[in-house]
Length: 337
Image (cartoon, rainbow, N blue to C red; front, side, top):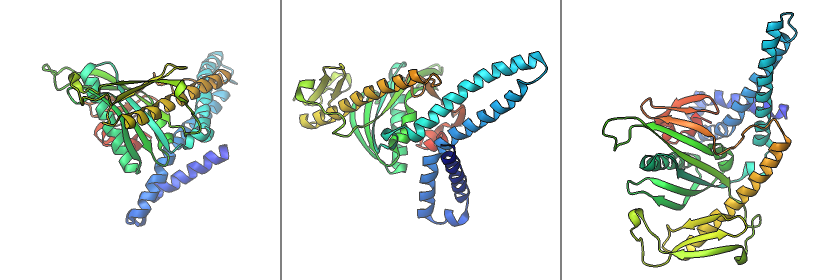
């Protein structure tokens, strides 16, 4: 495992040199290939570098534990306790990223973005997130399909579900799951006060047909009129579909398509994905209970990022890293990865 991580780090450093090589920069096909490989390694390498840093700190504190000074030994022991927790957490995260099973290499996933606290402003922020991920997907050459939306009168999203497909799509986007907070002055704010709103992002691997099999007896189908912002009817036929899974109680609604059949097909895709995700979470919790060193990995309730518009800055709370807000919203997620 360590040997493989060192090889990844060496390769990453080679790619960094190539990205500043004039010969590579002058070849559009080559620089694109280098950039893609570099982007696929950056999160793993950053995690491994953090792990190596903690390992070094543990070695240094171990020497302090042998000091003749009782106060220095006491201080070293308190630091060691914290460092061991960090060490175990980073190691578990590295394991998840490298040998996390078939999900790590999924080429299809479903992303759900939902407005949180903040009303219309939160819904507009949810739209900003959607546009950010869409732009990133375009640069990565991924296919994006909108499965369902719930719009507000101001053009924001109460919720939106996307299907994404492409090389490395789940491996890259899975770490976007969590709470995203925005600080800015809403357009409707007359006094120029900064408001704080939030949205949540969930990224789930989309299972293959054979992994989640559902029969007609497993769920209920409800048909109703599709509606838009303000309750206006999109059409006069019962094209909107809600599918409810009896065993789990999971319900999925789709109304974007005029065809009832298409809405049902999309709803079923999302339903299967949510059922699969629930199964994954149950297994993950079992593993976490067995491995006491695992701390909060992948918890969607965690606040992972703050988007500060007045300061044009984004802070990633997991990586303890800042970047330019305009560039990140333009789809350059590699600034954080």
